[in-house]
Image (cartoon, rainbow, N blue to C red; front, side):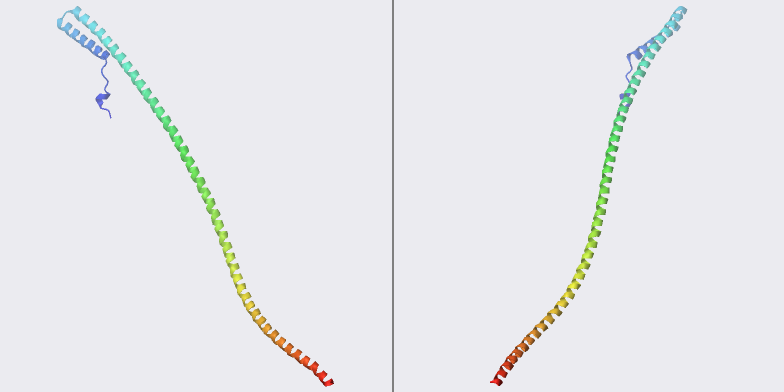
Length: 192
């Protein structure tokens, strides 16, 4: 922060001249009243009025110039603030647009993830249903396999029994053939 003395304006030459004129008028009036001459007092009074008007005019001109400079400074400062406000407004608009874009992107990504999650859950449910159906089919197939296995064992046992029976029948057939041959050959013996 700047010090108060740095902000103080230097006294202008015009104001110094105005002060000198007023000081001169004061000295002239004082000398005239001390001198006692009427015409000198009148001349001093008129001179002091003229010097006062001149000092007032000089001071007024200085005041007008100071006000104009201050107005120019305030206008420049207002323009600078306006430019700063415009830049900040543009920056804010750009920031708001960027944030809106990011929010929109996040919302889009979120909705895509929700859709993907829903699809994944649906696929998982379908896979679970298929797995359960396949598990049931496997269980049924396993039960059918056990039943077929039991029937196969039963069939194999019957086949083995049938083979034994066929072998017995073949033996009986062989015996019967032998007996038939023997019987056929016996009547020939009897005839001869």
